[in-house]
Structures are given as C-alpha cells and as structure tokens.
Image (cartoon, rainbow, N blue to C red; front, side):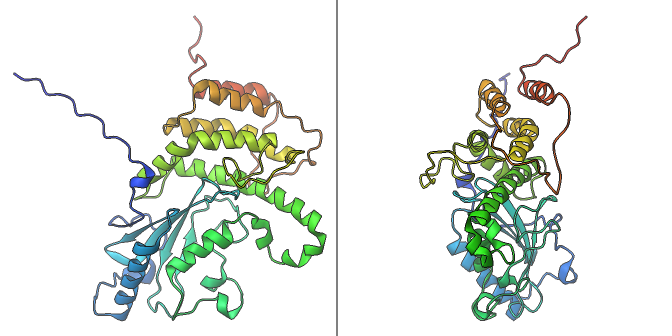
Length: 348
C-alpha cells in the first residue's frame, strides 16, 4: 500500500499577485447592502446598468498600483475599495477601506461612500461615523468645478481625490479655516506636526483592527500587505519616536533633512509605548519577519527617549491608551510574553 504524501501548505500570495480590479459574490458585510431596496440592477438594457459597466471598465484599465477595487456581480450598485497610504504622509503603509453604493439615479447624483474608521478620526475629511467629507461627493461645499458633474465625474476620480487630497502630507491644512491662517505659519506648522502624530498613531490602530477583522474578500490582501511591510512598520515607529525621521518619511528618498532632528511630543511617545506591544505582536502573528530580539530592542528603545523638550501632556480625544503605574515593567513583560521570551508556567 502506497502511503499518501501530505499536501504542501499553499504559499501565501504576494500583494502584487492580487488583481487590482476583480468581481466577487459575498456582499454580506457591505455597509450599503440594504440600499436601493436590495435591487440588483441586472437589466442590461437600462441606462444605469450601462453607466455602471462603463465605470467598471474605467477602473479596470486605469487603477494605480495603490488602489484595489472589488465589485459585486450580484449587486452591481455596490463596490468596495482600499487605498494604500502613500510615502511622505502620516498614512504611509496603512490601508483605508471604503464601501461604495451607486444611487438609483446615478450619475445624476454622486455615489455614497462609507469609510471604515473603527471609531478613529485620523483625518479632517474622514469622520468616525464613516462619513467622507469631499466636495466631489457634494458632502462639502466647494467651487463649481470641484463638485460632482454628471457628465464628467467618475468613481475613479473620487478615489484618486481621496488619495491625493485627503490622505496627504499635511492633513491638518484640510481643517476648515486653516488656509486663512497662513500668516501664522510657524504656529500652524507646529499644529500640523502635532496633527500628523495623531494621524499616524490612529493609522497604526486602524492597521491593528484590520489585522483582527479584515473586510470580506480582502482577507488575503490585508494579511499579505502587513506581512510584507510589518518589519518596516515596526522600524518606522522607532525612527519617528526617536525624532530621527519626520513622520511618513521612513525609507522615503525625498525625506526632508533636519540637522537638529524632529520634535516629538511627550504624548505621542506615551501613546506608542502603550500600544506598540500589542501591535508588534499582531504583526508578528501575521507573519512579520522581524526577529524576537529586534522586536524587543525596538520596544526597549521606546522607554529611553528623553522628553526634556516635549509638549505639555495632551490626551488623545478619542481614546487615551495611557495606563498608570509600572508602565515599563508591565509592557516589557507583555512584549516578552508575546514574542515567546517569557515563561508563563508557574513554579512548583
């Protein structure tokens, strides 16, 4: 009798192997699943059907490498997209998911978008409740040429606008009225840096949530993305906390130079110190390449940064991760345990 050989485990796909545009069937977790009365718009002779098919074709042929879209074959009015955070921004290496629905009178009215915030507001245009505030979607006032035009506008234009205008280098300047304060540039730039700290930290927290519960039809992509970039994400956090690199510019050739280093606030260090152990553990469990010792070194370094010139304490208005008492001991114990360097059994 010939003994059967066990099947080899399937190798994990790389992100470059995922189709940027593809059709799927499972729409059960889509935010707008009950919109339009659940109608499927499958009448190929209708104007709406033909318009949406044109949108699909535009996306299929023109999506950049940093945007991935899934359409639903049984609900052509629904769509899901993810934008990869760009270098040179506090959103670098993050993933930002949006559910999209076309109204029954599309394109007379723009599509509706829902942002997966996980309760964090990391941008003036992306609200905690999932609202996307953008002139092109008619959810924010703007010049006529910036608003939705049924004859010219498209869903690709919407996604590119979010990527370039929303998830940008200095999101603080998207706050209403900030542009008019340009004569206070020094003060405004300082506030912009503080905002970037918060945006980066909440991007990390969003990444952590995505690792725990990725949106359907993107499970493999999310896992591959953070498996490939996990080591860099960990190292970037260390560089940002040390003030050696401006937030968003780790491994970026166009990083601004600073002979005196980058100012890092005390609160940012505290947030990262408390959150990093769980985040590092999640990245490693996902298959990150960082060694146990490298992970420990990074966490140790967090506790020895001087904060003589740090800002006065400020609390994250959404959720402060700071805990009191024995911070160093508790976090080091936590990270050692997560990396398999601490014995958990009781002594006899």
